[in-house]
Length: 81
Image 1: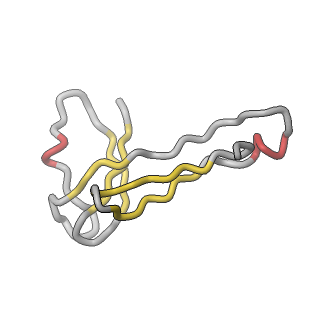
Image 2 (image 1 turned 60 degrees about the horizontal axis):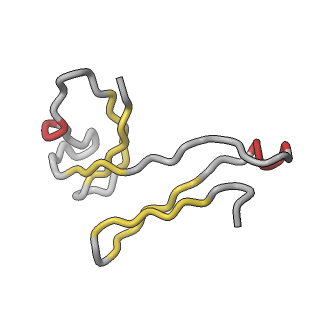
Image 3 (image 1 turned 180 degrees about the vertical axis):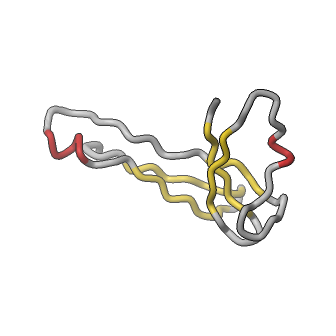
């Protein structure tokens, strides 16, 4: 049962939803404003790379912003240039 992250287009709230088999993504509404204008976003992951313990303790991060094509996400991975 996967957990997906969503963003409300009306109030900009981010929230997670646990999907059971057969759940319909079109029925998801924002828990803050109860709008159905939500979109699924790519969630960042937590993983370690490299040989140093410092890089293993850092988490990957994601920054989502509005772009001309819709929503854009930039990822920062610890230990990568």
